[in-house]
Length: 240
View 1 (spheres, rainbow, N blue to C red):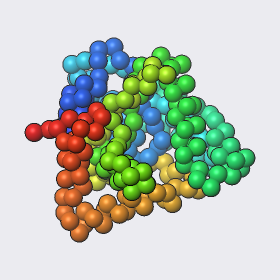
View 2: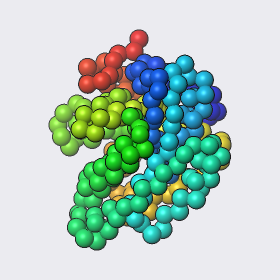
View 3: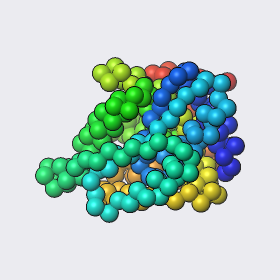
């Protein structure tokens, strides 16, 4: 997928949900995975012509795994001339060694978001962009349905009143396959997650389930997304 095609879908999300205002300083949360790097390229490119002017800064929360190499991300940010901040933490040690969590993802996510938000505020940002794509929207709905018994997913725009930060999700119209296509076409170096729980989570299980459902019933993920937009879940609006 070409960058221009990515920008078309990202701009639609920005416009539909009024994600950007003049003068915003947006932190891009960078894990090093395909989704966050696609988001970085898209937001860097779109800010050059978007009618509302905004700045971006890339931020990575280093969880403390010894085998994490961020040199590739540093090189990308230098090439794009985007400021890059690495937040060093001991989250991995706390979650896996000290606490020995049997379900590490929940605590890790909470601590990671806390560290990210503190760093973002220190950098003077008023917004943070997460790299959740359309498949993530649907997968989160399925997780909520299967494990919580409710029809729910995260909102395109979320205001965190305790931190005075707004979360936006500019990739919400992109399929994961399109993200993969962009990364491959442009030879973007992806950083593999060093987390030992990677690939063994409920989200991975649901993701694989949705892929099988979509294979057996082509278009089912798109219809699920349409159902979310028309269901009056907080923050979503029906698109005609």
